[in-house]
Length: 282
Image 1 (cartoon, one colour):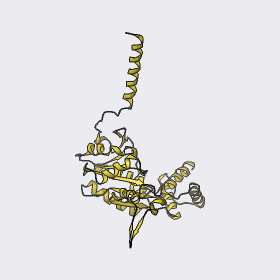
Image 2: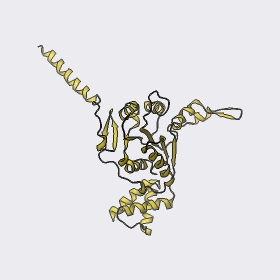
Image 3: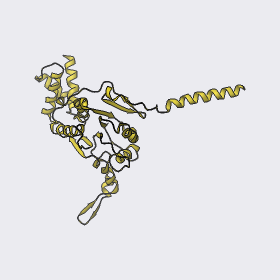
């Protein structure tokens, strides 16, 4: 064989090996009974070996939100009708933690959580097909969701929630968290294009498009910034969790408030972070 031919064959072999690394792995049936949390990566489900073990009782100052979402999830796990949920509002107020706490609450009753990034939402039909017919109940979890108008995951999620020919499985719901209620950025130009016909307001098509995705979630739950007293109560709870007294003396109180000022937020996440730091130093 000619040396030039050998070189070409070797280059072709190397190219094929590199292409194989880029191709998605062959789908493997997950071991549903061995885990309760999964992540969708590169076209397949990957088990999350150690999901976050936060409990519903650890989430303070959001009792109304907990009640709404817990009731919806309870209905779903029991096989009764339930809604897809959109959790919106201030950062660090417990939106993502609440979804994780629901898994810990209802995992023993057959609830499973599948985390999907927004770039992977185009694979929704594959996920729906994968879980269809199973006895477990699945929550498809999309964290910190927001879109630009040209992102492919936007149309995929919109079609899956309502309007697609692919029927949603009865054992699957979508829970999404976002800092934006309408999931897409809004501009002044959208408002300027709004028309008034008599006494009626007719939003511009761009506005209708931006709110249409949010409207496909049956249950909207809003989260709000905490007051100073609520923030300090959360700090006290986590200090007890880490083995310290929940009674804040003046030094701890001022340190907790200064910690929040430095981070520009009195959120549950900031309170938890302070408690970890303070307990570690003690």
